[in-house]
Amino acid sequence: MQERFQARMLRIHFGEDDKWQGKPLHESIVAKCVELGIAGATVYRGIEGYGASTRIRHASHWKFSTDAPVMLSVIDTEEQIDRLIPHLDAMVQEGLVAMSRVEVIRYSRNVEKTQDTPSGRA
Image 1 (tube, rainbow, N blue to C red):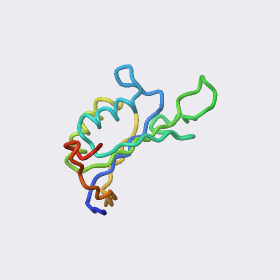
Image 2: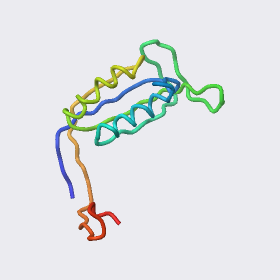
Image 3: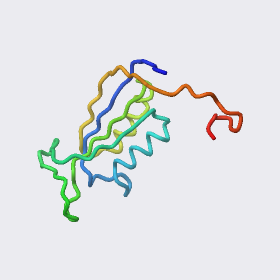
Image 4: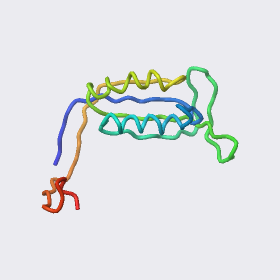
């Protein structure tokens, strides 16, 4: 089954060492997305990059160098993304958020619900 609709995509760029209330920032943002019922979020760890500070961040196999660039991609409706933005305002101390309108094609199986569970999942 295929469904097409308009949505918003956020790309949030920051460093792997960034934290929110003692937890890695990417984990905190993903948890907030789940809490808000956001359709999807994916975290990408980069090899190298820089942002507002122009400090180059590197991914490294060395234990003491863990500040790789991170990009977190979030896709949902405009209304849902608008609910997330105030939380990002508080959580992201240094970084960049790019927002764009996107057309989404969602593929899903048309699976009949079973009688075992209300959700149709066994």
